Length: 349
Ligand code: AMP
Ligand code: MG
Image (cartoon, rainbow, N blue to C red; front, side):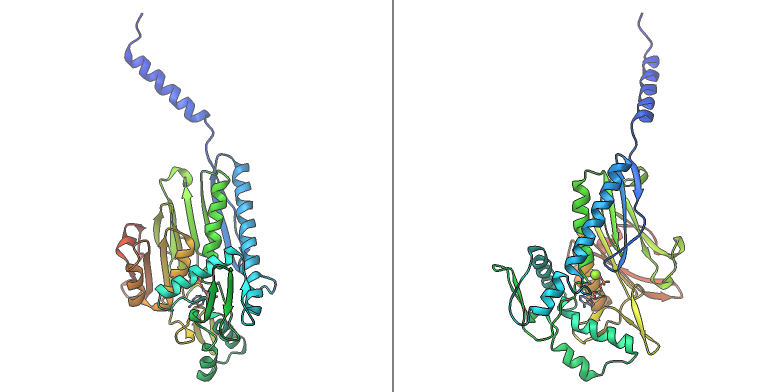
């Protein structure tokens, strides 16, 4: 006897429901916070099971520790410190990894007309000492340190994989780009573990790929309200962005600064003047990779609102959201056209 079509349909629906219940669901695991590269590191993984997610998190943290050991400005035994101590005496051979990151940094120095410059090391040191002694450097001191700064004083020989400094006392500081690089490497490692999706956040340098938690169609990230510095939670989020397989980085005055004689100074230095940048409250850059996002967020912080927006607009792959402060009407936010498509909520008043 032929069964009515509706019985077949209900049977098929029941079978589908049963399958959905029985099929294993992806697990979402949040690593919690670790201190790596002088900042907070966090990984969220969506994986077929818990074991796969945890293995992925451990591999990502391992890779970040490895990069810290190579690129730290503060560790005397890092490859970067070896380079800094020897590259004035003669060309120093470096690993391909370090060479390529330095080359990328120099390329961004050119694009940002010197706003971004990893040779800023001696100035970072000068201003750190000023913070410790609570006395501002004199114009003469700044002028003499500026003689040791400038990417045009770097001699890079890609054929022999060497770097040489053309001025005595030069020092590279990768603080404005290395965390982004570590995030890119982390994403590569996470992909290799076969997890379904992953988001890596290293001190505000974020990149994600693949499946987002809770079946959402994309990963969502929040931009901190720079005028609520130090506070966390939903009220401290100025806006939220959707992030489809991209990277986002935020640099800003609110994030790290120091007080000297009662005035606050940014940790970002303008290599053209030798002084801390009159930093914008926060600069968020979305780019295809985290190295680019990290370097351009620092670069735009130096260049300021108008020049910074002009730089971002000249690069189709880069979207920028600049929060310059707060007035009676709420946060003062400017953004490139391509950033508007990424905004889910905000800016908050
Ligand atoms: P970020 O937090 O990514 O904006 O990077 C800031 C860090 O980069 C500082 O703590 C310094 O180590 C370094 N830095 C400061 N000024 C500059 C600059 N103009 N260009 C490149 N790196 C910089
Ligand atoms: Mg940066």
